[in-house]
Image (cartoon, rainbow, N blue to C red; front, top):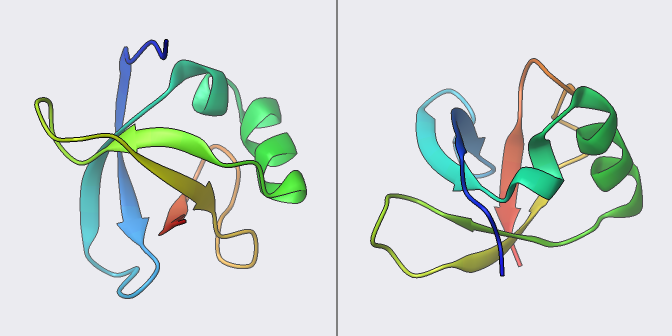
Length: 76
């Protein structure tokens, strides 16, 4: 079961200039180190666009993301 306590603006891989609110599992984004590890391994994690939406698997787009600063997500 995923815990969702963090909410931040991420960008979709199709248009990274328009930020989108994603609610991401704490294990995938609780520290920049965890983000970097998930980016380098391509680990899928659960996220949803808004509370109440269905969960989907996403990965960090390692080429366009900066841990702790800019997060670009791709849906798996």
